[in-house]
Image 1 (cartoon, rainbow, N blue to C red):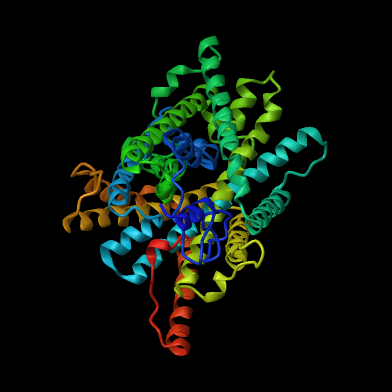
Image 2 (cartoon, rainbow, N blue to C red; image 1 turned 180 degrees about the vertical axis):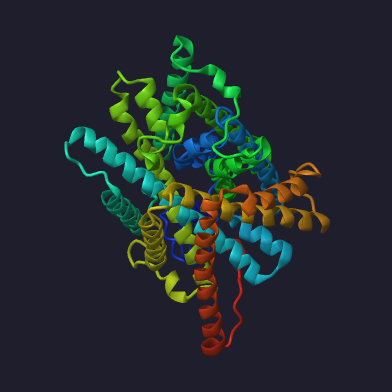
Length: 501
């Protein structure tokens, strides 16, 4: 390796501070530097587990239990199977195209249609914003519940929760504006906090089973709050539970920073998915064992999640009841930060390539943060949170979490098809999924996108997702007109491989 290249590798890598990089970040003489391969199997496993475990399990476990009763663990297992099928296609694709651009790169390699690539990339952006909006509601509810135990008279109503959620999103924007390179150091700590909170829930469930305070027999009892069959109820429950499994696809963007990715990436990703699935199943079992069936449908605070009720009922004499809301806040906040960072960086990357309006690519002179992209994604999150909470008949957690799953299931369907298309063109990578997995994955993901896979009141997810994508299409159209009229150029990705740089 030359001296110049060594200097480039030892410098800060592009985008490590959340700026999206640039020719003067992590470079020597203006040439892009390669990302440093610093992640081994243990660090990669921790990253994958920490990325998956977050807002999902706290937000939707009660909703899953309401659909299928005591077999609430079953939809989580099915969601894990769907995620594993999708991971197989991702692993095959990334072994052939090992760049950190994710689904957009794979779709572009398969079809070469710039608008389709844009829709996929913008859908990923929207999934990050809806996920962060979900997290903001959980943070707000649990923070106010925790503070109420310390300060008498702390307001916890709809208005106070809305204001707190908006303030939380604003704080994330300020962190992203400063640059989040520093926050990476806390990833391990936050991941351990999440696992600790889930271990508390699992321990309470196990204790209830041992001392007879819980109903262990319910874990094999199917009960539905509707007249659906077991298959239909599990299908709806799976679309809800899938929100808790998303995040594994983000690790694909770390492939250029993993040592020997061909050797360790498949094993570590599937292991990480398995660990998360095990934790989720045990948490679901704890919920149905500890909480009486009628109370699952009516938690004390629905937006704060059913897990808080497990602590209240299963460990009423322990001070953990006072601590758990704050554990939830720390656990969920990291999810929101990562999602808002990802969304702003993708917008920046698309604007930098003149696929979205150029102002979205502007960065702060000192911090190199994409400030307009951050403000734009923050405004979208503000609008989502305010819109859903202003409707008294709507459930903020269910609507936004479900929209996240809806958008990603659509993206995953296209990724499976892309895997099949690129497989027919030949070329071998270091990993090849079983012949049948992309076919089954495409069919299952597409099936779970349909209206039959969610309650009628949850069809608002299509309106939210459609409105978000419509915003992207409008921005694309504006860019197309400007490029055609003022610059005399076509609108399309010049370098999709560096979309997230």
